[in-house]
Structure formats: structure tokens, C-alpha cells
Image (tube, rainbow, N blue to C red; front, side, top):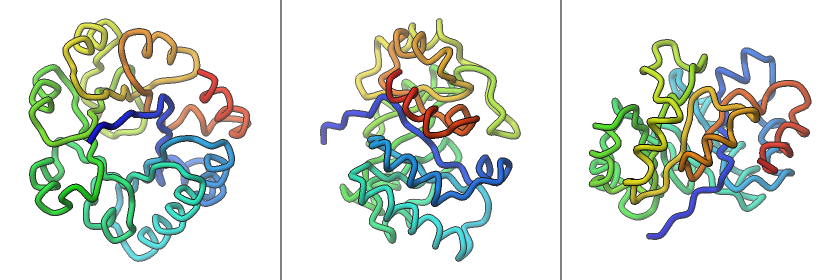
Length: 206
């Protein structure tokens, strides 16, 4: 399956939203109204009933607008909600196991943090890879070492699958990230700051 990543990949992180006192459905609707191409729902706590219900409601808003809807980590939740895809990390189910569970019903993304993991991902049954953190990030308690733009540029030329860069990416540095070879920029925090509607518009322009 050929897959093209939208250039702007907003991640709806429940922890980041809670820190800012933001309502996930309101923010999801803002993304939908702006006609973004993809949204990931990221919930790092226990996936209790309230989290499942929220993921379902967000998915309805996102998919009604025609955007791809991804669930972070949980292939079972992605399947139950009829999501378009699942994004897994190095400590989650390996992509081969995801494929055994989901077959071709889901697009699959995989997080990588260094050259070794990125090269291993080339042989995995994934539709895209994410590389990061590119810069310093506050969205993880124990982040991996930063990759940096120069390393992204070196690695991107040999990657056959679409690549999203993630980690500390802002409207101020996104241009150099894309110029270095990233197909997409995945963003958790920058678009939540200040006037969100304006920030989302600026991201789509970037």
C-alpha cells in the first residue's frame, strides 16, 4: 500500500491538553475545521473507559472531516474504533505482531530514535517511520538523545519509507526540518500555544 504522509501531523496528546486545561473535543474540532490531513490520539495513561470514549468521540470528529485518524500504541483500540492507523513505539507490540493482529486493516507507523532503529524499520511492515526527538522535548519524561537536523539530513536520503520528524519542532524550525528531508513534522505542543486556530493555519502554511 502506497502511503503519503501529510506534511503537518498534529498529535492530540491528552497529557499536554490537560496541562493547559484544554478540552480534547474542542481542539479536535479546530483541527477538523482547518482541514488537517491526519490526527493522532495519544494517551499515555491507563486506557480506561473515559479514555476510550474520548478517543471514540475525537475519532468521529476527525474522520467526519476526512482526515486520517491514528491511535497511539493500542492496536486493539484502533481496531475497535475503526481508526485508519496505529502508531507504535520501540517498547510496544512490534510491527510484525501488529500486522498479525490487524492485517491490512490499519496503516502502521513506528517510532525510531537513532540510526540503528531507523535502518531496522526499513524491513518492518510499516507504512511510515518517525524519527526523534529532533530537538529537546518536554512531552516525554525520559526522552532519548536528540537526533538533530544534520543527522536527519544524513539519514533521510537512504530511507525508502515516508518519514516524520518529531520532538521539539516549532513553526520557527519546521522549515529546516523539512528541507533536511523529513516528509512530515509531527507536533504535540507548538500548535497548542496562544491562538490555536491561527497556529494551526500557520502550520498548514509551513
